[in-house]
Length: 252
Length: 296
Image (cartoon, rainbow over all chains, first blue to last red):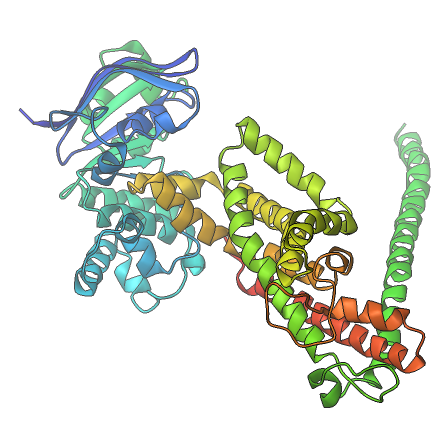
């Protein structure tokens, strides 16, 4: 039996009167890749935005139910402390344009005013860039602004920036949807490597991607969690007819 | 049938071709008109600069720039006190307006939905349209009458009032143009709201904010009206904040209004210096705009 690092219990999310997520129950296991898939607008992005409490920044947003991170209710925690433990990477790469590559990686420390020595910073930058296989490509340009990077490199820089904070969980919100196939393959390989050190929640509308990289898959449809289980089972012998139709491409 | 068909196609193409020619012609005409209009606008500007340079360069010398005005009737004399005064006044305006304008700009952009922010944004647009002489009179009532003296302080405040709306608008608009992904990137690293604004958003918007500040500095450098009732002007070199102080536009005004032809020459010289400063600031603004451009 695997141990859940994140437990989502009876969780609902709303924008004003609109119920986006309906009573979701989901366990996320440590050092595993959990894919959340579903058609556009099903609420999958809202779900991960609730996990690091970004959802509540939207006016009119509200939630009910509980989410526990290693037994702690995340809505009892300070949001800024929670977000340091749960990193996030977005659809579109968003490195800080006014910072150098080095500063982008270490941004979580600098912006938060966390004081660490130069040696520690160097080490964190190198480790994070190596973890995303970006080190060899940028090690001679660390003090340049990241504007010359390709989309795929920018996205890996954003992952490195999140990893630098040493998070427990990494949320990836369709991290490859704005990338070309080669960069996509690169990121997918990277996800396989990263799960050794961090739990990954991956939102994707790409069924193939969920099948390729994840250990567990959750299928969300119209705000409801239809099915959750090991990826292999979900794709070969799903319990629900809707899951079967979705993974076989009949809708979505 | 086939022949008929072909013939029919050719016939129907004919009017299309004519219309295309008409469109090409209209397109050309449009280009000429646009060119002509821009030419009409640019020509007087070039003539003005040429005229000022022609009349001003004869007067401008080392002595003109670094000596004080002389009483009427004496030869020579310069505008050193006016140059110092202008820099003094604009610096005061800068010190008063920039922190305030940037802070208010941040507020207006960050709290768009609040009534106060909407009101402030609207009012600062209105402020840009207030005639500068009115600003001068207002500051006269606020700072000259109570102190019973014209002063550099009053002049600086008057210029600051001219600058603040420009700085607010520049800050607000540049911040508004930043993509929301930037803010989210900061939040997801656990950065607090205040640090996100001060260390991520404002630095990313710095290019636009500095451009706005430079535009406002350039603009008030040439202002005469708000200074007439506030800093008033002076024959002497002064560094005191509570005494009247000269400025280049005031010196131009004094000399140009005088009955002496040699003073008229000095007015041209001062105008040339002023124009040079304004053009330089303009070029500087463009350079900064280009070099510090933040690409997303």
